[in-house]
Length: 202
Image: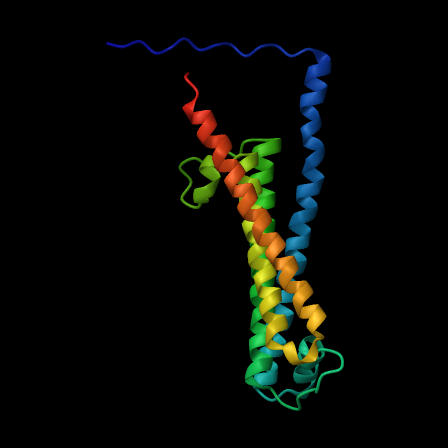
């Protein structure tokens, strides 16, 4: 019968080391602030959704609010709810959802990685990615989330392409390409580091 390896007792920290290690809790107010930002996004989402439903039902005030949000300055303002307007509003709602997902990754993943373990093992709602999260994985996921958000903004611009100068379209495309290349570079670097670490003899 095999014996379990002996448990190494935790080293006692010096007062200075204990103070430095405890300083990680200074990040707690930052994550609580992000939770409040998440609440603001939820409120904004429901306001936009309420106005979209109201405009579809013929509410003039809701329609004007929707048009104020999606109409680009200098372009022709529509007089009724059109398919393009609905698409722009829905893309705006998707944008809010993706930013909220980004906030959740930062709040949960960042707290788990840098502050304290949440002990969610076995919890039915534990995110799949949280079981193997670390600073490198979190950085890669955040980069890909930013690319997704940038894609939504670029799509909204292309739908209203006639209202923008060509230089604006080119600039936004270049910025999105930079985000994409940066995310790919981060993912590739993480893969190299992971492969190198796994190939080292233990």
